[in-house]
Image (cartoon, rainbow, N blue to C red; front, side):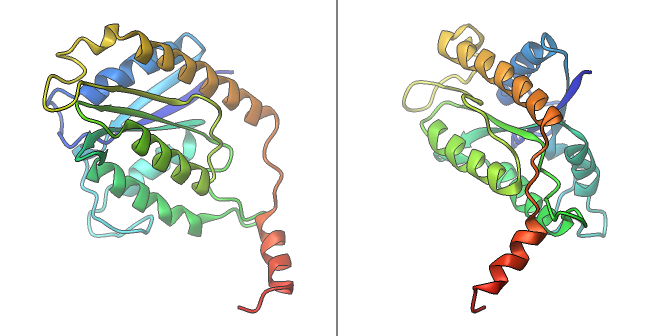
Length: 217
């Protein structure tokens, strides 16, 4: 049975502007396709999404339509450019809105909606910061419930200082980035199969109740 991957492209540029981040997404999605994984990409900047930490802020908020697709996918990949050495403001906003899923726990075991999903990260930029973006974003995904297997960060950055980005610099020919794109695709697909056959059994509701027994607050 095929699996589904959702890429959230957190470029600052709405469509139809060229996106270096999208170019690297397309490469990873192509490798996932070879592994019977069907991919979809959402360019977040194309939607009206207000800042906040709830799943639905009403009044024209288009985040709920994206969240519905997040909840339906098997693999969730956050893709972000680097600006000022950190992830984009759009990426930060996405993770803040995902904070609302803590309130959407399963009524029986309390698991958050991202439990059972595999997380990964893609990064592009012409400046330093890829490791910092990967570390923080992958940590956020684990905290939200995603499982993060080995080697599921794929990035391309240019030389120090201003310069051409992934497309103009022919980053698609960069051996290290291509290698990590392959690692990422294979490990994401493998872990999605593992989780489908072996769902996480942890009952968060039971553990919450147990914690209350020896806590003061």
